[in-house]
Image (cartoon, rainbow, N blue to C red; front, side):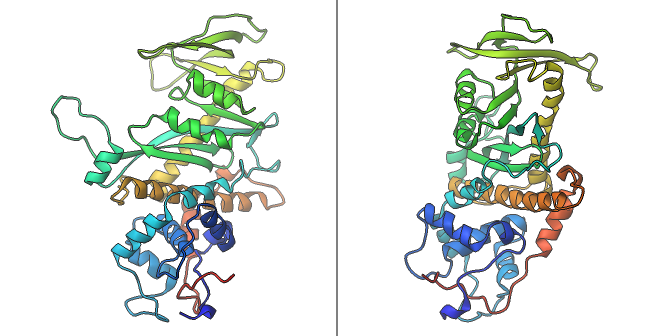
Length: 398
């Protein structure tokens, strides 16, 4: 395998965001660099997994053909691998290089020129969780679990599922960080691992499924500000009532058999919101670390909370547009299911970064929300084509 034939393959516009040097960096940091020449070296496997996510649900051989131009006949001694070789290469690579690609976003991509990305100097972020179906295999049943049957003795309900919590930059729909785990792992436990990506300039929005005293304290300790909706299980006795109708409370969360009596100081904003689909208005209760009404008026925070829906839009882009509705992740073991999830998130992030550049690199910057994710996905797919002479992938030159 001649060294002149280059040591890798790229993935069109996705490689503009995740350059070969960057891919090598995350592979090396994860300790996944191959020690000997292989048919499927680590860099190629990262791009292959990203390509598999980009062209979902195409078969793996079709994805490799698109990337390399290699068909049934070998080229330069390199041939399309069989499923067993791909499986072994995926196991060698693991999840971390794919997850680490998200970390390269570095706390968000929005700039002062990005419309709608900041509020009073705070970068708007949102937390949310979702589940994805995985192949119904014994390994996934045992390692992932899934929704429980309603009746005792009833068989499994639906597919095994993986749970994922994402931290999204609201103004750009960019996934800044994510944590995937089994369905049996709760959203709060996964969200706690995302503390590593919080920054003091952030304002993090979250819905009722997340608030818990311990998670709140852990995230607030990073210096990031929080604005979360809470359920009626939270005890929010009024302490000091503020001029805008909000109040300071020493709050606690009474939930479950082991109630957490720890108290935290929060500011409470309560309001009614008309819902055309309901007979009466819906009561919202928000808690925040922003205690000064002069710096954060209650009416503005109530209006701002609607930005949390941007994360719902992000998850819809990933699950409905990119993967396709009712798509089942095909990997047969939990670790490879998580690898698939991080690859899908990384591809979505790459597309959103490209969209953001297109939106702001203008004389009058556009809100990235005005651009079509579906159109950007199609354009990114069209950008992938093999370049003659770069295959097969040889070892990285020192």
